[in-house]
Length: 190
Image (cartoon, rainbow, N blue to C red; front, top):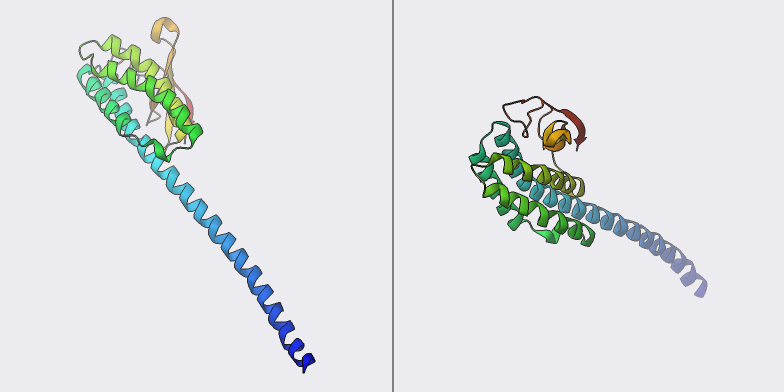
């Protein structure tokens, strides 16, 4: 009788062990999949928030290419609002620290641009620094579309300056209508 019981219990334990290992593998696969989905969602949220800031920045850049100080001021104010509504909870602690440094500086430049309609020279000075901040932010948080880092070698007494653009074609925000195609594409951001 004992032999019969042991012979029946052996295969049951074997099946239970095989099934348990299979469940652990399934549980691990489900956990990995969930982690990847959460990571994708977090990246999507960051890129969406970056898109709101980038939208204001690109409007500002495009206004400066046509020497439109009033539209540049409106876009600067739009950026200030986008910085205020940016949800930093989706960032890692390291990203949040880096973003905080970028945000404080970039927001100040956007405020200056927004409050200086009628003074396009001053707006362009702040746009130079804002462009560096936006470049750093895009490198930190990513983007959902290709962007181009362009450089004007003549701006600021030939010291040069960069800007971020949504198109490959050069439309210079520093020299505007005076020299609209001055510059080169230096980098593509994805």
